Length: 418
Image (cartoon, rainbow, N blue to C red; front, side, top):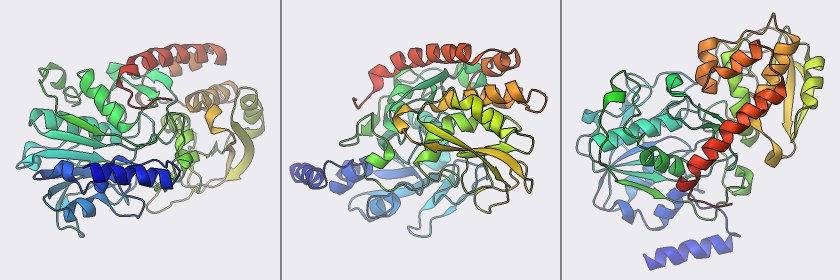
């Protein structure tokens, strides 16, 4: 154990205190933490070390550890599936271990899937937005572990868009698989910190979305363990970690995309293109009817850390990334967002400002889905206030109040300081 710790310290010093993931921490100890255990691994293609070795292969080869089952989230174990594409149960070609889908007939490990296991291990890269579904997969798996009295290990990874927080907080009536617990839209937490919050707040055994879930009694379960990152600061963005960027999903192509996503993802609830079907999803947005120059001028008065340019683009089918995108084959007038100072970017406020500008300039053409926007945003008030003609300052003030409330709630669950 001491030798392994010294190795990690030497590695960090030699490479200028580069960030070490939870996977790299346990790998340096040859997975001793899992010795003698039968493991179920919840993971995807992002769970690799700096040499590109996948966690499933590393655990499969580790002496004294039995990898008995793999569990695949949205986009699958190897990350090849489009957003929303159902995943089927299969056998992993590299390890021969069965893969159980958690994005198909069920979103939660069943008792049959967990039979014979001692522990579940969760390792995948999140992007820092509440409506990114890997968080929901973890929440449901935590509930399953508690119900079946299994240990649950989270191998932590960085929040790629830093520890910054932006509201709103999800309201209970809008819970769904794209928003499972009452956290801020840009939560500013790692998956390990979120797991601690889900357990600490008693949410871990209220994750299921079925009608009877709210009646389920609390379980006295405390078998969560987080293997923490080394050398990560809450102020860091992903490019500062020295870790390789591996697209967590087909349209999450780089750090800039991830940073814009908590705001631009809200466009999923409108008839305005979020850039799917282009080479720059969430960085490039628009519609055939957009007066791009007028909207850009309004946005430039209310932004920090971002430059905007007007462009045109035509969404197309992109197999493996986006099929049947909005305005497929139509020329769109659009906006391209360029990050110039990531530490200044308030992504949710940017998305909110864009919706405000669109409603102000195109009230007869912009359509905001009541149900979809409430699910994505986590509350109904944004759509209601936009339609009522609220000014941007009033919208921002309400968002700030919810941000502060969540910041206070999360404080006791933070594992890393500024």
